[in-house]
Image 1: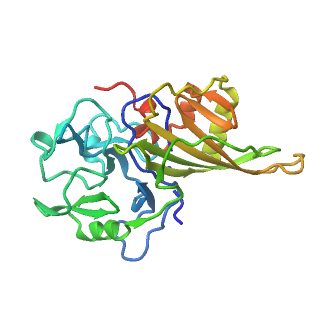
Image 2: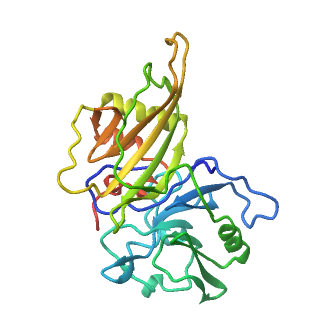
Image 3: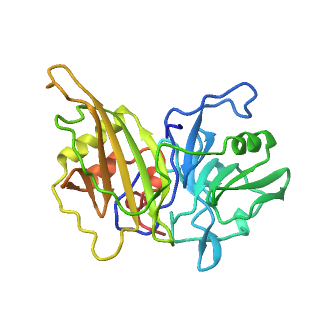
Length: 313
Protein backbone atom coordinates (compact mmCIF):
# COMPACT_ATOMS: atom_id res chain seq x y z
CA UNK A 1 0.00 0.00 0.00
CA UNK A 2 1.30 3.45 -0.85
CA UNK A 3 2.04 5.80 1.96
CA UNK A 4 0.67 9.15 1.23
CA UNK A 5 -1.81 13.86 2.30
CA UNK A 6 -4.94 16.23 4.35
CA UNK A 7 -7.36 18.79 4.91
CA UNK A 8 -10.01 21.04 5.89
CA UNK A 9 -12.78 22.64 7.73
CA UNK A 10 -16.30 22.52 6.77
CA UNK A 11 -17.74 25.67 5.42
CA UNK A 12 -16.30 26.64 2.07
CA UNK A 13 -16.52 26.31 -1.63
CA UNK A 14 -14.96 23.33 -3.26
CA UNK A 15 -12.36 21.03 -1.86
CA UNK A 16 -10.92 18.80 -4.43
CA UNK A 17 -7.54 17.33 -4.56
CA UNK A 18 -5.18 14.71 -3.97
CA UNK A 19 -2.18 14.38 -1.71
CA UNK A 20 1.49 13.83 -1.34
CA UNK A 21 4.03 12.35 0.97
CA UNK A 22 7.30 13.80 2.16
CA UNK A 23 9.21 10.58 1.41
CA UNK A 24 8.13 9.00 -1.84
CA UNK A 25 9.57 6.55 -4.38
CA UNK A 26 13.30 7.19 -4.94
CA UNK A 27 14.73 7.99 -8.34
CA UNK A 28 15.85 4.92 -10.27
CA UNK A 29 18.32 4.34 -13.07
CA UNK A 30 16.96 5.81 -16.28
CA UNK A 31 14.54 8.24 -14.63
CA UNK A 32 13.97 11.32 -16.80
CA UNK A 33 14.60 13.61 -13.81
CA UNK A 34 17.19 12.77 -11.11
CA UNK A 35 14.96 13.62 -8.18
CA UNK A 36 12.98 11.94 -5.44
CA UNK A 37 9.33 11.37 -6.28
CA UNK A 38 6.17 11.74 -4.26
CA UNK A 39 2.90 9.86 -4.62
CA UNK A 40 -0.41 11.67 -4.90
CA UNK A 41 -3.91 10.21 -4.81
CA UNK A 42 -7.23 11.28 -6.25
CA UNK A 43 -10.43 9.30 -5.87
CA UNK A 44 -8.49 6.13 -5.11
CA UNK A 45 -6.05 6.58 -8.01
CA UNK A 46 -2.36 7.02 -7.15
CA UNK A 47 0.37 8.54 -9.35
CA UNK A 48 4.03 9.41 -8.80
CA UNK A 49 5.33 12.91 -9.59
CA UNK A 50 8.67 14.69 -9.05
CA UNK A 51 8.82 15.61 -5.35
CA UNK A 52 9.76 19.26 -5.95
CA UNK A 53 6.79 20.07 -8.22
CA UNK A 54 4.41 22.72 -6.91
CA UNK A 55 0.61 22.63 -6.55
CA UNK A 56 -2.01 24.47 -8.58
CA UNK A 57 -5.31 24.17 -10.41
CA UNK A 58 -6.65 22.19 -13.35
CA UNK A 59 -9.67 22.44 -15.67
CA UNK A 60 -13.02 21.76 -14.00
CA UNK A 61 -16.58 21.85 -15.21
CA UNK A 62 -18.54 25.01 -14.38
CA UNK A 63 -22.06 25.18 -15.81
CA UNK A 64 -21.07 22.81 -18.59
CA UNK A 65 -17.92 24.70 -19.61
CA UNK A 66 -14.33 23.65 -18.77
CA UNK A 67 -12.43 26.41 -16.95
CA UNK A 68 -9.30 26.57 -14.79
CA UNK A 69 -9.03 28.73 -11.67
CA UNK A 70 -6.08 28.84 -12.41
CA UNK A 71 -4.02 26.19 -14.29
CA UNK A 72 -0.63 27.19 -12.92
CA UNK A 73 1.51 26.80 -9.80
CA UNK A 74 0.23 28.57 -6.67
CA UNK A 75 1.87 26.72 -3.74
CA UNK A 76 5.37 25.23 -3.54
CA UNK A 77 6.04 21.62 -2.59
CA UNK A 78 6.76 22.74 0.99
CA UNK A 79 3.51 24.69 1.34
CA UNK A 80 4.73 28.27 0.73
CA UNK A 81 3.12 30.59 -1.78
CA UNK A 82 4.75 30.63 -5.21
CA UNK A 83 6.48 33.98 -5.64
CA UNK A 84 4.89 36.65 -7.80
CA UNK A 85 6.14 36.33 -11.35
CA UNK A 86 6.92 32.61 -11.00
CA UNK A 87 3.56 30.81 -11.48
CA UNK A 88 4.01 30.19 -15.20
CA UNK A 89 7.63 29.01 -14.81
CA UNK A 90 7.16 26.36 -12.10
CA UNK A 91 6.16 22.72 -12.84
CA UNK A 92 3.10 21.73 -10.84
CA UNK A 93 0.40 19.19 -10.02
CA UNK A 94 -3.03 20.68 -10.68
CA UNK A 95 -6.43 19.79 -9.30
CA UNK A 96 -9.91 20.85 -10.38
CA UNK A 97 -10.72 23.27 -7.58
CA UNK A 98 -11.14 27.00 -7.13
CA UNK A 99 -7.89 28.73 -6.10
CA UNK A 100 -9.19 32.07 -7.38
CA UNK A 101 -12.42 33.42 -8.83
CA UNK A 102 -10.50 34.71 -11.86
CA UNK A 103 -10.89 31.72 -14.17
CA UNK A 104 -9.54 30.87 -17.62
CA UNK A 105 -11.53 29.23 -20.39
CA UNK A 106 -10.12 25.91 -21.56
CA UNK A 107 -8.62 25.32 -24.14
CA UNK A 108 -6.42 28.24 -23.15
CA UNK A 109 -5.91 31.48 -25.07
CA UNK A 110 -3.66 34.50 -24.54
CA UNK A 111 -0.51 34.15 -22.39
CA UNK A 112 -1.54 30.64 -21.29
CA UNK A 113 -2.19 29.30 -24.79
CA UNK A 114 -0.32 26.18 -25.87
CA UNK A 115 2.44 25.18 -26.02
CA UNK A 116 2.99 25.71 -22.29
CA UNK A 117 6.21 26.84 -20.65
CA UNK A 118 6.46 24.11 -17.98
CA UNK A 119 5.41 20.47 -17.53
CA UNK A 120 2.42 19.60 -15.35
CA UNK A 121 0.20 16.82 -14.07
CA UNK A 122 -3.56 17.31 -13.78
CA UNK A 123 -5.67 15.05 -11.58
CA UNK A 124 -9.35 14.65 -12.41
CA UNK A 125 -9.29 17.41 -15.02
CA UNK A 126 -12.13 17.93 -17.50
CA UNK A 127 -9.98 16.78 -20.41
CA UNK A 128 -10.80 13.97 -22.88
CA UNK A 129 -8.60 10.88 -22.85
CA UNK A 130 -5.91 10.62 -25.51
CA UNK A 131 -2.83 12.52 -26.69
CA UNK A 132 -2.87 16.09 -28.02
CA UNK A 133 0.03 17.65 -29.94
CA UNK A 134 0.51 21.18 -28.57
CA UNK A 135 3.38 22.16 -30.86
CA UNK A 136 7.14 22.64 -30.37
CA UNK A 137 7.44 19.05 -29.12
CA UNK A 138 4.91 19.46 -26.31
CA UNK A 139 2.25 16.78 -25.84
CA UNK A 140 -0.70 16.64 -23.43
CA UNK A 141 -1.54 13.00 -22.71
CA UNK A 142 -4.58 11.97 -20.68
CA UNK A 143 -5.32 8.54 -19.22
CA UNK A 144 -8.80 7.57 -18.08
CA UNK A 145 -8.74 5.29 -15.03
CA UNK A 146 -11.28 4.29 -12.40
CA UNK A 147 -13.78 6.92 -13.49
CA UNK A 148 -11.34 9.84 -13.41
CA UNK A 149 -8.34 11.14 -15.38
CA UNK A 150 -4.61 11.71 -15.06
CA UNK A 151 -3.14 14.22 -17.53
CA UNK A 152 0.57 14.77 -18.15
CA UNK A 153 1.83 17.69 -20.23
CA UNK A 154 5.52 17.71 -21.18
CA UNK A 155 7.96 18.00 -24.06
CA UNK A 156 9.80 14.96 -22.64
CA UNK A 157 8.27 11.65 -23.69
CA UNK A 158 10.29 9.75 -21.07
CA UNK A 159 8.83 11.95 -18.33
CA UNK A 160 5.28 11.42 -19.59
CA UNK A 161 5.84 7.67 -19.77
CA UNK A 162 7.39 7.57 -16.29
CA UNK A 163 4.46 9.40 -14.69
CA UNK A 164 1.67 7.65 -16.56
CA UNK A 165 3.39 4.31 -16.01
CA UNK A 166 3.13 4.84 -12.25
CA UNK A 167 -0.66 5.28 -12.26
CA UNK A 168 -2.24 2.71 -9.98
CA UNK A 169 -5.25 2.20 -7.77
CA UNK A 170 -4.91 2.34 -4.02
CA UNK A 171 -3.58 4.48 -1.21
CA UNK A 172 -4.01 4.61 2.55
CA UNK A 173 -7.60 5.88 2.53
CA UNK A 174 -10.99 4.49 1.60
CA UNK A 175 -11.92 5.89 -1.83
CA UNK A 176 -15.52 6.62 -0.78
CA UNK A 177 -17.41 7.39 2.44
CA UNK A 178 -21.17 6.77 2.22
CA UNK A 179 -21.66 9.40 4.95
CA UNK A 180 -19.57 11.50 7.37
CA UNK A 181 -17.86 9.38 9.99
CA UNK A 182 -17.51 10.14 13.70
CA UNK A 183 -14.97 9.04 16.29
CA UNK A 184 -16.38 6.03 18.14
CA UNK A 185 -13.49 5.00 20.41
CA UNK A 186 -10.63 6.56 22.34
CA UNK A 187 -7.33 5.14 23.55
CA UNK A 188 -7.56 4.70 27.32
CA UNK A 189 -4.10 6.10 28.04
CA UNK A 190 -3.79 8.28 24.93
CA UNK A 191 -1.59 8.05 21.86
CA UNK A 192 1.45 9.47 23.68
CA UNK A 193 4.17 11.23 21.70
CA UNK A 194 2.96 11.92 18.11
CA UNK A 195 4.90 10.13 15.41
CA UNK A 196 2.74 10.51 12.29
CA UNK A 197 -0.64 11.81 11.16
CA UNK A 198 -2.50 10.19 8.30
CA UNK A 199 -5.04 12.51 6.70
CA UNK A 200 -7.78 11.56 4.23
CA UNK A 201 -9.88 14.38 2.79
CA UNK A 202 -13.20 13.86 1.05
CA UNK A 203 -15.60 16.03 -0.92
CA UNK A 204 -19.27 15.43 -1.62
CA UNK A 205 -20.03 14.17 -5.12
CA UNK A 206 -23.13 14.86 -7.18
CA UNK A 207 -24.34 11.40 -6.12
CA UNK A 208 -24.26 12.49 -2.48
CA UNK A 209 -21.43 10.35 -1.16
CA UNK A 210 -18.00 11.60 -0.09
CA UNK A 211 -15.18 10.76 -2.49
CA UNK A 212 -11.48 10.84 -1.68
CA UNK A 213 -9.95 14.12 -2.79
CA UNK A 214 -6.57 14.30 -1.07
CA UNK A 215 -4.47 12.09 1.18
CA UNK A 216 -1.10 12.15 2.92
CA UNK A 217 0.85 10.93 5.90
CA UNK A 218 2.48 13.81 7.80
CA UNK A 219 5.68 13.16 9.69
CA UNK A 220 6.61 13.55 13.34
CA UNK A 221 7.20 17.32 13.30
CA UNK A 222 3.90 18.08 11.57
CA UNK A 223 1.99 15.60 13.75
CA UNK A 224 3.30 17.21 16.94
CA UNK A 225 2.46 20.69 15.68
CA UNK A 226 -1.11 19.57 14.99
CA UNK A 227 -1.40 17.98 18.45
CA UNK A 228 -0.11 21.16 20.15
CA UNK A 229 -2.61 23.26 18.20
CA UNK A 230 -5.50 21.03 19.33
CA UNK A 231 -4.31 21.36 22.94
CA UNK A 232 -4.76 25.15 22.68
CA UNK A 233 -8.08 25.13 20.81
CA UNK A 234 -11.37 25.95 22.52
CA UNK A 235 -14.09 23.35 22.98
CA UNK A 236 -16.91 23.72 20.47
CA UNK A 237 -19.89 21.52 19.64
CA UNK A 238 -20.18 20.04 16.18
CA UNK A 239 -23.16 21.55 14.38
CA UNK A 240 -23.46 20.79 10.68
CA UNK A 241 -26.86 22.39 10.27
CA UNK A 242 -29.57 20.97 8.01
CA UNK A 243 -27.45 20.49 4.90
CA UNK A 244 -24.99 17.59 4.45
CA UNK A 245 -21.41 18.82 4.88
CA UNK A 246 -19.69 19.43 1.54
CA UNK A 247 -16.43 17.85 2.76
CA UNK A 248 -15.02 15.67 5.49
CA UNK A 249 -11.59 14.66 6.78
CA UNK A 250 -10.58 11.50 8.59
CA UNK A 251 -7.29 11.33 10.48
CA UNK A 252 -5.22 8.72 12.28
CA UNK A 253 -2.74 10.04 14.85
CA UNK A 254 -0.11 7.44 15.69
CA UNK A 255 2.03 7.96 18.77
CA UNK A 256 4.46 6.15 21.01
CA UNK A 257 5.21 5.85 24.69
CA UNK A 258 7.80 8.05 26.42
CA UNK A 259 9.96 7.83 29.54
CA UNK A 260 7.78 7.77 32.65
CA UNK A 261 4.57 7.24 30.70
CA UNK A 262 1.84 5.05 32.22
CA UNK A 263 1.55 1.51 30.93
CA UNK A 264 -0.60 1.41 27.81
CA UNK A 265 0.36 4.80 26.37
CA UNK A 266 0.79 4.79 22.60
CA UNK A 267 -1.13 3.61 19.59
CA UNK A 268 -3.33 5.03 16.86
CA UNK A 269 -6.24 7.38 17.55
CA UNK A 270 -8.89 8.10 14.94
CA UNK A 271 -10.02 11.73 14.53
CA UNK A 272 -12.18 13.70 12.11
CA UNK A 273 -12.41 17.27 10.85
CA UNK A 274 -15.73 18.61 9.67
CA UNK A 275 -18.26 21.40 10.15
CA UNK A 276 -15.62 23.71 11.59
CA UNK A 277 -14.37 21.41 14.38
CA UNK A 278 -11.85 18.68 15.09
CA UNK A 279 -13.16 15.59 16.89
CA UNK A 280 -10.37 13.83 18.80
CA UNK A 281 -12.53 11.34 20.71
CA UNK A 282 -16.21 10.52 21.12
CA UNK A 283 -17.85 13.91 21.74
CA UNK A 284 -14.47 15.61 22.20
CA UNK A 285 -14.73 18.44 19.66
CA UNK A 286 -12.56 21.54 19.33
CA UNK A 287 -12.73 24.65 17.18
CA UNK A 288 -10.82 24.58 13.91
CA UNK A 289 -9.16 27.88 14.79
CA UNK A 290 -6.21 29.73 13.29
CA UNK A 291 -3.74 27.77 15.38
CA UNK A 292 -5.04 24.47 14.03
CA UNK A 293 -5.14 25.85 10.50
CA UNK A 294 -1.56 27.11 10.82
CA UNK A 295 -0.43 23.60 11.73
CA UNK A 296 -1.88 22.44 8.39
CA UNK A 297 0.04 24.95 6.26
CA UNK A 298 2.37 22.26 4.94
CA UNK A 299 2.85 20.40 1.67
CA UNK A 300 -0.07 20.95 -0.71
CA UNK A 301 -2.65 21.84 1.91
CA UNK A 302 -2.61 25.61 1.24
CA UNK A 303 -3.67 24.76 -2.32
CA UNK A 304 -6.41 22.39 -1.14
CA UNK A 305 -8.02 23.53 2.09
CA UNK A 306 -10.62 26.17 1.49
CA UNK A 307 -9.76 27.93 4.76
CA UNK A 308 -6.09 28.14 3.72
CA UNK A 309 -6.60 29.29 0.13
CA UNK A 310 -7.61 32.74 1.33
CA UNK A 311 -9.68 35.46 -0.33
CA UNK A 312 -10.66 34.85 -3.91
CA UNK A 313 -9.59 37.17 -6.67
